[in-house]
Amino acid sequence: MFLLFLGMWIVFNGKFTIEILIFGIVLSAALYLFVWKVIGYGPKQELSCLKRLWPICRYIAFVFIEVIKANWGVFKIVLNPKSKVEPKMVYFKTDLKTDAAKVALADSITITPGTITVNVSDDVFCVHALDASMAEGLDECDFVVKLRKMEEIK
Image (tube, rainbow, N blue to C red; front, side, top):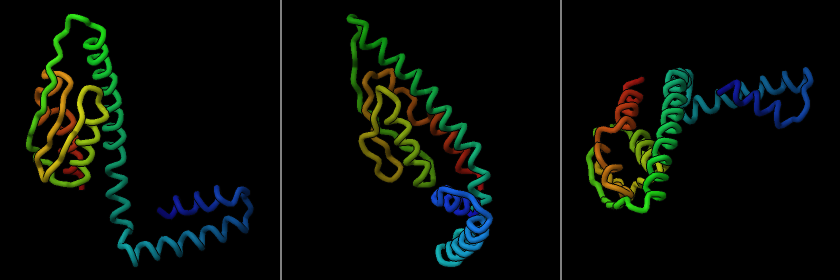
């Protein structure tokens, strides 16, 4: 967080001098201490965030690949005049514990072409799928498995 504050200070100043750097270090340290004391965000939270950074990056890459695969599936349905589309509404319960993981799951489902999260109530998700084949196994899809592993990181 300190480095983020310092980096923002340098970027927003638009130039770099030793005076700006020293004043930025002092100001960033003061702001970091303020955030630590008032908000409670300190070194423990930063370490926790750093531990999650690589899994989050891998998850984003995984979602990107799944979006490409789903685009191909929707593309085949749309361009095949003989395909019978069977829209389906699916309800499933998840065992994800944190709200952040549930939001990430809902967003991952929605961003994937052919599916959209209609409602989330506690642990129950309501998802509309363009075709019944896209709705299969949503309760234990790879999104859920990867998010569950990310929740275990402390």
